[in-house]
Image (cartoon, rainbow, N blue to C red; front, side, top):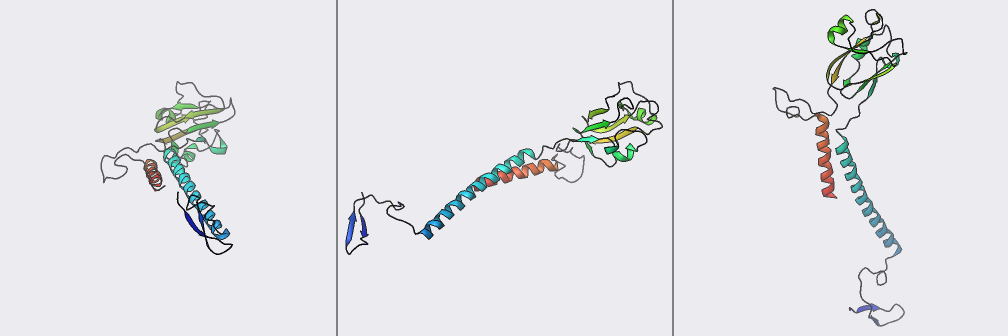
Length: 214
């Protein structure tokens, strides 16, 4: 037990206390209102900074996981025009970007048209393929592989005279590793790292750095 020496505020002399001494006890050491306010503010700031670091780490980790994940989209063929006669679908397709995982949506009045998947020759000559047509009026085709795709309407002469034919080029899925080139200077593409994957690695590194600093 440590004996504390203190002055008696009510009169001269010294008072000896047998109470245990605690340097930060509010009984032995009371802060002035101003100092107490400052102390509370510093404590609040410290707790806020700790929470902010934890929040930043959490956000960085979520971004690292979600960065390579890109949602596929539904593409309305012809936009507001839908699938109809006398519309230039070749020109329309040049304004779009198609990726694996996207879905083509052919909208039309059921019974008026249909949708047939064709090869290049069938597309060029408007020859009906042997496959069964889609006829619901709200036909959805998922683009499952990259490359050229061709679609025509098989009703009457809609393909020949009504220009109801669509040719698209499907690109690889967003976020997929880029194929390694056969030559050229080394770089991110040469080692098969897509930009989105490179970004996810950068975010993951940031998350680790924040965890260490926290």
